[in-house]
Amino acid sequence: MARWTRIRALALTAALALALTACGGDDEGDGGVQSNEDGSVFALDVGTESFDAAATALLKGDKPKGKPRPQEFVNAFAQDYPEPEGDGVSVTADGAKPPAWYPASPQTRIVRVGLRTRDLPKGGRTAASLTFVVDVSTSMGDGGKLDAVKTALHGLIDQLKDGDSMAVVAFDKRAKALRSMTPVKNGRELLHAAVDKLKSGEETDLEKGLATGYVEARSGYTDDATNRLVLISDDLSATGVTDASPMMKTIAEEAAGGISLVGVGIGVDSDPLLESMADAGGGFTLYVKDADAKEAERVFAERLPTSLAVQGRDTKVRVTFDKSTVTSFRAIGFEPRLAEADDFRDDSADGGELPPGHSVTALYEVTLKDGASGPVGKVYARWLSSVDGGTEEAVANLKTEDLDRDWAQAPAPLRVDLLAASLALVLGGDAPGDVWLPPMTEEGEGLAAATKDEAVEKLVALLKAAK
Image 1 (cartoon, helix red, strand yellow):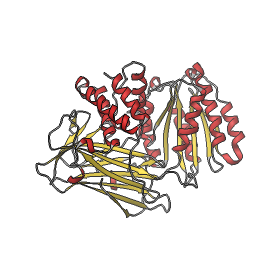
Image 2: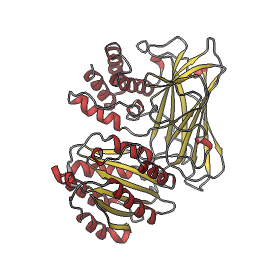
Image 3: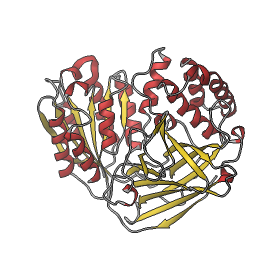
Image 4: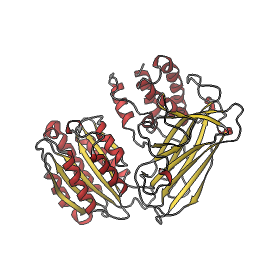
């Protein structure tokens, strides 16, 4: 495993998408981007929504909807990356020769690039400034969806720290701030009262809701806090908004200005528009699939708070491959999230937020030159320090000797990562399931027995269900 070192850098402004830069062009291979040219940049996806939706469908005996995203399948599994020395980010690069079931030349290697933040310190997280923008259109009144949201918000208000602040906006065809940004310490009852005012109404005007939400979020913006807009809806597909909407530009601009967007889908297991908005806003998406009040409360109580503490703020990653040893590479995943080549050093470009104890992984298929020996590439991570506002960097060097082991000797998490990504390729029609799935299932069963990991056991069940 390649070791990493830390480098102090100059201060830079905050930005909120996670970029992965690599030597390569934009010619697409199956399930990724393949090239031997310089300049490809990828926005790194930190979500698991695609995996969650596919798992739900497969275990019900259904075919997953939409195009699976390999990176979100990989993100669903635990890694073995070391903690950083401080409050920033560690960088890991390793790999191995591919398994027999994976079609590749003798010069091919599977490369894993990983980032990890430290676990939450004893002192806890920094303060949060949260603006909840709640869809109260007619459909939200069906099936107990709005009631589930209200129950979850009441629970969250009781859980938030005294140093946090919260605002509540409701929208149907109109938008109204039910409570402007209010400190939790002396305002819990006021916030509870605002949540009680949420009632379903008429059709949805998403743009009005977001515009009002951003006004409240911006007016209540708090320096040295996690500022976040949380959009809650049951279905945005009927709103008329598309990925090309000017609203997406606004979301990205607000993210660059310090307000990220998190989407919460109620009563659905997938909402492509909500996910696109969260991507543009440097955030992520959560789902309460059955509009169950207890499940909604669990999601709001467990998953939202863990994302409020940020260790790797404004994090960017750049990966370069050495032309003297590498002929080409293919990034497995990330193809929908291309970014500009100069983003890594551009202080105004979007970066990303990594919560404590989180890891993010990128997989590559790399082709080495015959007889290659020596440096293969470098991985650079750059982030905003939570201590003094300066930036720091970590660098991991990758050599041919880091990639020469056989697949059976590769770390178990790397092997699981490739199985997960390959399942996404099969489900998306980018790999032959009749050929890949039997040996993949066999390998998965061996890993499940060796690791005793429930997540790997679930992966095996999904591999079997996909046959």
